Image (tube, rainbow, N blue to C red; front, side):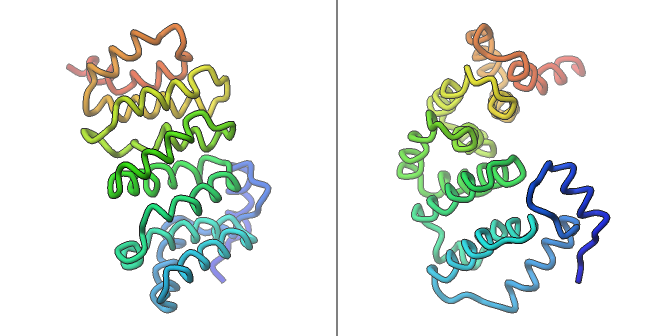
Length: 221
């Protein structure tokens, strides 16, 4: 009922998506999810994951997949059932979705949150993602600490970048630059030193993105 065919066609073209859109704006989708999730409470973790997996796998529009990700973020369920055992469903979504609108949300808001909450078991699993053949799994390893600020594990960040530093794909190079830029707000000296030390291997895109905030701050000071 809320669909907008004109917007849907524009969204599909912009995202280069084989799956069609319904044409919902992000605020409308979030409110719809809140209303539906509230009206249909879930009582067991298996049902929570099952609903999210069904929404994802049986989706006819891209918004239904967004809704699956939204369901996994509902606070009242996360308090009870959000554990390291959640990681496989995110990996499934990353591999099946394989595009930035899904993956970047999952990486920074879900996988990254799991790491902050549960620490070592998540880090151990993500270590195996660093050199994964799947581009979007590696991108997730790079972006998982995007919001960790002073809790960033620099040794892991270094390894995650090294795992994709020779990849010529735009999305690998962009992820490296984005991760460096995010951490530059916390420790610009570390990022500057890292880029200086690895400039011959980093792509111009990664270097430019990584230095963006530092250069802007320098220009304004």
